[in-house]
Length: 449
Image 1 (tube, one colour):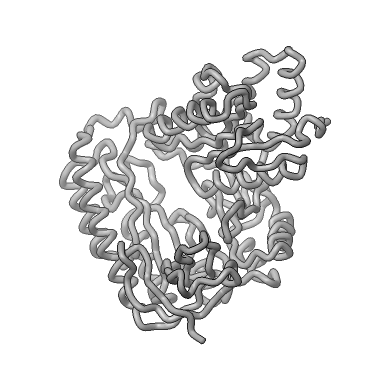
Image 2: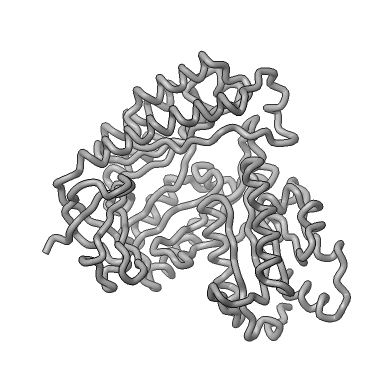
């Protein structure tokens, strides 16, 4: 049983690293603790509880996790420090040894975070805490729990966790070891969460997960079934699909989204490499022909669609000519933005058995070229809409600052301070798109009266 009295009047600080799924989970943790009487600290306050939700997708991410933990311990002396997330699962012993860390929770345990926190805090208060008791991490094969999450935190959009874990085991990736096998809740339970978000005023919901196209392994349902059911929920203005594997992005799903008023013309599709040989080395489950077909079909059905693509550079086996294949393939695709990641060696992964190693210098050069290509594609896409009208869901801005929001097809829009109004927050406003802002990260706009 949870001892709610230990939480009354306490204040908590939260820090999240990594993906949208992590941010969604942290926000849900914050809501659970708020229900127990815990307030979120202001910038100038000391916390009684610190929660760090970690990422481990790269070696750089691991380093940032350690830095964040040390920083939170320094900034909030005496606070009860909880570390969870992928890095906590993969490197639990190392995390538990960090001075100031009181509780380490793996992927199986975070579903019951409040219970673990209540028990550990009570033991510590009684002088009974030990390193073993604070170290709660199951082995990967035993990760079976699903931690529901549908929350917005301090954002406008809600992030709905529809799936967790992954069965793909790509050669470069540690996520299956950190998150466990693919699993999901029922469609009915997700509908209930969406209805609650609508009751709270939510207008846009982003479907998140580790491999969301794999939805249904736990319940015998399909991702397309989920999409069709959510589309019927009254009150949701917009849905976005966060990231979906190309082999799981079915033609049926693309066609359905094209006809839906609520599912936006916006896709994020991980490619990782535009070389078939590199894709085989990665153990990806598609080739460039299939990927190109998906992009062409999206553009045929939704010419205005924003398409983001993940690309990894410098992976083992990516010889110079194979990178050139990748660059040429991407240059010829009608995509909008490239999310470029340099390959990072991960202990225990099969990629370490691939002999050809790309130097750090070459990784940087390749990343730079792809980022330049991405900027060209994004700016060309934005430029097509200058002078047109669009509906934008605006987000709250600090007083005296420009407001920002996104169009249906994910163009970032900037409304100058002189035109920004508090009542525009979480509202869909019709604007005229004028031109690029100072750093070309958004299009300036004015409200259409």
